[in-house]
Amino acid sequence: MQTIFSWSQVSRRGVMALALGAGVAFAAPYAQAAPKTAATIGMTVEPGGLDPTIGAQVMIGQVTWQNIFEGLTTIDKAGKVQPQLAESWDVSPDGKTYTFKLRQGVKFHNGVAFDSSVAKFTLDRARGADSVNPQKRYFTSIDTIETPDASTLVLKLKQPTGSLLYWFGWPAAVMVEPSTAADNKTNPVGTGPFVFGSWAKGTKVDLKKNADYWNKQVSVKLETASFRFINDPQAQSAALTAGDVDAFPEFGAPELVSSFEGNAKLATVIGNTELKVVAGMNNSRKPFSDKKVRQALMMAVDRAMVVEGAWSGLGTPIGSHYTPNDRGYKDLTGVYPYDTEKAKALLAEAGYPNGFTFTIKAPQMAYAQRTSQILQALFAEIGVTMNIETTEFPAKWVADVLKAADYDMTIVAHAEPMDIDIYARDPYYFNYKNPEFNSVLAKVEASTDATEQDKLYGEAQTILANDVPALFLFVMPKLGIWDKKLKGLWENEPIPSNVLTEVFWEE
Image 1 (cartoon, one colour):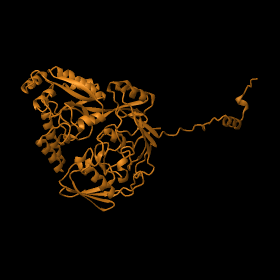
Image 2: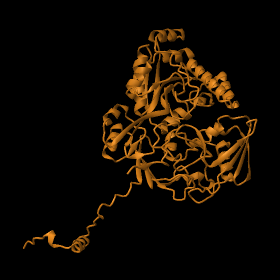
Image 3: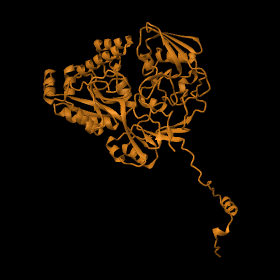
């Protein structure tokens, strides 16, 4: 028998009773949905670890810097140095003594207090004989470290170091709690606004809001955040469209950017970065030990074609290891412009009238593979044969190229800001040695005059543009695709990062 049920005959109380009996939850009339407090951020490459003080991969900092870990200083979204765990500092007139006043009341995620002894441990670890810090050389000017009291740190330097405060803001200089240092690679413990939750290898890293965050001037809106690792560009696009990820701050497929134009849900934000795409050469290995060969290869490169083919025209050609964002920038793309005939002539002068054959070790990332294929075609025009060997990044590339320098040519986007000094490092994978260049960089550090430093940076750029220890190609833009209601992500990238401190959902 079928029962006919009339809603008009049932009282409000009866309706609620029926609903509860059926296990149905009714929202109060006109109740607003709770604001979203979770965000999923997409990344192309998964880091090999989560401790930026022991690993060179920029992806480590993109997950942990300013989220989990913090430093004595920090770099803001405009690229400027700001106080962080050091609230202030004094520098002696001779530039050789730095006295830091440390913040009080700061605790690591495990409850241990941050103080001068922790800062001393961190810096000693970074500069020690057994240090594997990726920026170890930035700490070598420190002679002695004194801790007069818990909130005072005094550094005595061997020589003035004009970039010290800037370097202290980098991921490699974040403060590390001694008892957790050995495990930070897989279980990072810092002082930041987010606490490490879990890491599903190959998939994602989850963070949780730090309820006891020391900086009460910052209102952290996100309760949870996830970094999801999606390598395939098509899969990145699909994840954004489906809402499986809320943002790809560094979208990996420039050819697909136009497909988001006019999207009602997703915003396209193109900013600047420090990502310098260069084809590094092993300067200690023939024929790349001959400057004329390197210059010839540079003249064989049509940078405009590279930018168009590798990154859909979204990039800025460069003539040295420097970006237009950096202080003292000089446009040196005209030093060795594209000129096939002059390139052939230089090769002949160097003793290679019929060219030569070599191998490029190219990471699997799209920009590296595409650029390699374009270079292969351009070099063929001057009689040079380049074979392409795809090299897994980061693990194999770091082992074979960065550490062992076992390669002819490679290609990678150097992401660290103002890192022109890498050509002065010994050892470093370019195997480039130029005392004049090293001298110019030493003068930069010895000076506290910004105008003089900018002039010297110009000289350093010019030396590299003429010597061509690497083929200087282009600067990548920051291609951000994210939900229009997600606010607070950095549009530009003065330092590789995904800072979540001020990220929130617009209601």
